[in-house]
Length: 541
Image (cartoon, rainbow, N blue to C red; front, side, top):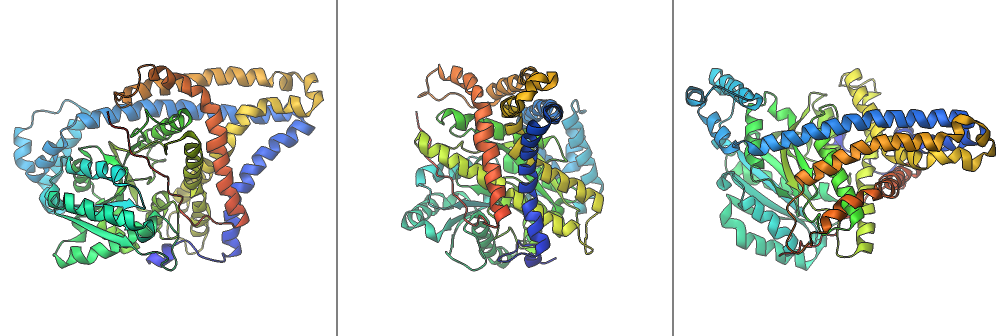
């Protein structure tokens, strides 16, 4: 399957494709309308319908709470591992087996098994010293003060920097200031790495949206000849894409190299870190903090649920695989999540996302003022929710006589894709206001015991659901970065009280941004411009 065959369509779609573009919005609005219709004509059925939704939500919430705890434990364990030592063990597996003590933990047992496999058939496994890390840092017009800390984290990483190539991918439409920033960064940091390359993405290239995907794809395309001219094997190059405010854990690249080497199907896999939105969490407004923490726990829970794990934000993938599939989509404003489906179909379903239980720190949305921040947050969530554009992309490929992936496995993934977007758009609205709808709309509901007591039943269930919020609050304090010196101690109280905003952020941000994105697809008013989230430099103490 060629890169063009993998791409999203441009211009007029087929009727079959247009039908599936409309499906998410039709189901979402249908679920909301059904609650309204039942409230008018049959309050009892309305009560049953809503309670069914809430029961499903409670079951999911229990699973998410348990996964949050497991994910946080995995992250703690991963950060305690000496990945540099483990990577060194892989270089001489037989010697390591002779000197390592008997394993005491499950992680140590797995490490011993990996060493035994390498010692048995060393030709199947690349050597750590043969690997090259290619890091593409994407930027639009962000200031030097935002980008420099990201590059500094790469300097401070535990990986051998002479095995790292940094590609600063910036937009020509970003203007003269980003050009000056790029040149300054190269001058300051080139000597720290094997190379520090600048690639400026031209404006208005054909068949491209204005977004990150075309930028990083162009950067990779321009870098591949440089790689091959130096006799570097693309199958030994691991590519990591970063936004310009992303800060990887010091052990991230070492851990990725380790997992890449030991993975038996490494070229048909990508490696997904945890995205923690903590970069400026103490300075961001309360609604943005709630959303940032929610997004953080979503990535943590997904990491321990293999059936839910997808490419998201920053991730790593072998260069040879990227070359074969034409890198990333140049027509999607959600190139990260779309990359999962692009890879899934390119490898005919034989594709895996491997969790890396180490964080890449990102910023909560904060652009210097509350008003600007709330607008920027909505646009960011709408862009993420536009991942609903993957629904038709997946549907036309699995419901096709030319399908090259297993039907049942692909169908299960497809249904989870649809469900995730529908739930995001509807559940918060139904749970928050659905209990009052029969009483407000239909006076006869006061004569129906079930409908009359529906608000009370919903309140009781929501109280039980508070257990999940308490777990989230406790875990958030365990993983939050230290309070900066310029932040007063009373901010800890705000970090607890802020959760009263959860119903508000769930409706006005998560649900409405999802409905907005789905409505664009329903009407054929496609979002083809990546709304870059403005970034403000973190305050220094």
